[in-house]
Length: 399
Image 1 (cartoon, rainbow, N blue to C red):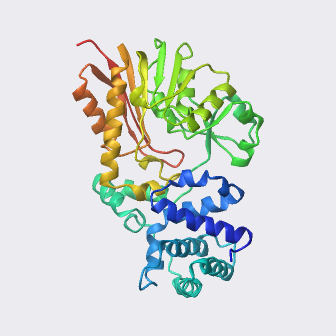
Image 2: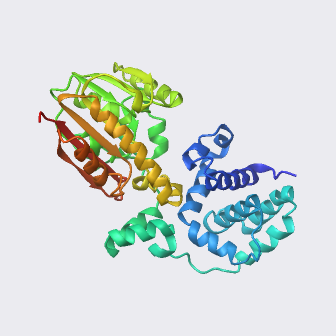
Image 3: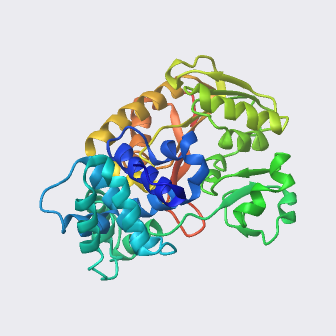
């Protein structure tokens, strides 16, 4: 019998989310966007975000009490329940165990789940915060070889923390109670405030606010665009960086492409709300044609720069996945280069802090297209007030 009430529903949805995400059928973002999550999204989101941040230690605690691995659905239920037991302490522990046991009846595993969770509760040792016991093994291996112990410790601390709620706004942001300005790139203004106040504000309804991380301003702030007349954004949806481009080059005509019809609906909505004209079309980046003064390639990436919002991304990271991404990134970037007008500009943007997806990819472009001269760019690591990102700007010169 299905457990009733918010406690049971949210635990069931969190457990199912772990199953779907670990099977790589959905990302955490995609799962939380599902309609059935909406009634208790905040609780489920907190459970899943916490689980993937503490996955290494939580898995170890559960697995230490199991002699033989159960079916995936039961394993996910145990880990979701363990997350609630240790990190959602508003609910009495016995209530959480009881709810999990009730949910386990569907799998004829109620006695097993009851026994394992009581054994798990016997370990009250504080959860470790050191990188080797927190970060996924592949990420720890890469980052410990690349970064100093101090930077690695800082990245680990950020991984365990909640991402700040930030937004870009004009002077109307000052009407939001308690709004505080946070650092950004270029002349863009970013703030942080209570999410409820921002979401309920008239400024958001009028399009004077765009919910966004300050790291998004890094790429768009590179270079100078006063001479640009035609801009193509090849991976535009939902339009956040494109809106910033419209501010930086109000004289330019915008052509916004994306392969996702659903996400392009959001691009259309965002531009219509702000009365900014743009040609918006559904198309793969590799299929775009034409000649443009500025071509933007905000390529799909591993998301290792946005791990506070997408902690599951670090657990998906592996060599095979990155190799597949690198091939796609190169394909998009190289095609983007063919669309750049003489003396035009090419802008690469990623949400990754990996060298392969940034500096090495930039080097590959320059080797293949020697007419493109790098003007600016690099990688910015995550900080307390923003995510990490990579960006590079080139100008096409005559050889």
